[in-house]
Amino acid sequence: MATLPIDNNTTGKCSQLRQLLTSPKLEFIMEAHNGISAHLVEETGFNGIWASGLAISAQYGVRDSNEASWTQVVDMLEFMSDVTRIPILLDGDTGYGNFNNMRRLVKKLEQRKIAGVCIEDKQFPKINSFINGERQPLADVNEFCGKIKAGKDSQDDPDFCIIARIEALIAGWGMSEALRRAEAYHEAGADGILIHSKLSRPNEILEFTHEWAGRSPVIIVPTTYYSTPTEVFRNANISMVIWANHMIRASVAAMERIGKEIYKSESVANIEDSIVPVKRIFALQGADELTQAQERYLHTGQSETHAIVLAASRGNALYELTHDRPKVMLTIGGKTLLRRLLDEFKKQNINHTTVVAGYKSGSIDTSGIKLCINTEYESTGELHSLLCASEDFHDNMIIIYGDLLFRGYILADLLGTSGEIVIVVDSTLESSHISGSADYVYCSKPDDRGMFSQDIDLLHISENQVVEAGKPAGRWIGMLRVQGKGLERLNNALTELQNQDDFSKLTIPDLLNYLVKTGHPVKVHYIHGHWLDVNTIEDIDRAGDFTKT
Ligand code: SPV
Ligand code: MG
Image (cartoon, rainbow, N blue to C red):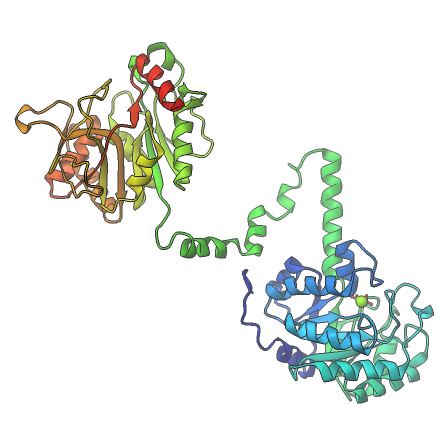
């Protein structure tokens, strides 16, 4: 089975068809009328496809009377051929014109990797043989032989097959005319004869094959004599059976049944289990292949960033404002803090966000996120919340507090850093407003604002200024990045810390200090302002102004 995009390993479709035609076995090919039905025919196990004129015209919603142009047919064949590896035999009606049209048709079919064409000895524009077949005029034998020859002389691949279809029996001209025509078409170079009948018994087909005696491969279309046991065809040395219209008839039956049911019940609840899931359609379209290709071509080796948002706390200093919702659901400038975060994530192509909630978790808008709940949020700290999301840890992720507002470049720059664990530190200590508790950061070097990309290590992070450590280099803003081996370090540290009695109280700064203490560097990415967190009522006003600028 081929998957999209186009499988170019299509060489040999003509030779496959020739083998089917000349093999001593009775072979079966099945009708298809568009890409998806062709795909299904191949997936089912058939070795070849009949691109039926009746079915292709029907799926276009027009009559089988050359109402769809031949180029429209060829366009559809391209879709069918692109998604399949088995050969397609086109029902080419009368060749869509005279010998000259036939020459061009063969060229165009070969360009689209169609393995062969069957033309019938009627006149253009044709009408389906089952509609007043006996009254339809036949083509002149010599003219039709010229068309076969012109087709054979135009093909590039010696295995491309041209099948001559004889309508003499349906048109009421009798067996001897059918045999005379078969002989002439065979002489003209036809690779096989399709003998058509509209009787409900296979009698005239069997008489024909008996008289023809294997001079060339014989193909039949048992649409009207469908009850004939297949063994009869096998015994008659028939080369190939075409099931000519069964995919389109099956789909019409299914669409009618389901459509009526939905119309009647004004609901789709009843029929859901009797149709394929949408996933099956995606599979038929080769959606997985596209996802893999996106990984390969769009992200140039970089996997997608995931985000973990810590949002379990109420924000006690906000009093009534968080009476019925956690802090992340506060609206600032017309949008909740959470929505603002998600919008910033989207800008950086972060599409996997896990939010760890606790307080009033039911009020969190879950669209576009996965929600994890820290049920013990009242008695536990940040690391416990972080652990709740451990299933969604990723080797390319950010961990962020839910009450953070920041300019987009801060996240973009953090994503551009290469350290395995990197924290964002604001070096504007003096002028910054500090509500809530501040996480003072002590670093290997202070922020040298004259340098763009600095290599800075975290030494220590603490809620209080540590007098003996000197002046802190800044404050952690509540945003960090983990990538590559950093994930293993984070997981190991969390596992080890869980053995401590006070684990339930530990914070992210505790985790960072532990990492540093155990010899795992945590890198610092300096910024200078352009963020705030929302802890108090005054912060809400400030946040409103922040979103306006
Ligand atoms: C078709 O499938 O369009 C055919 C076969 O031509 S039949 O409809 O039986 O004539
Ligand atoms: Mg047809």
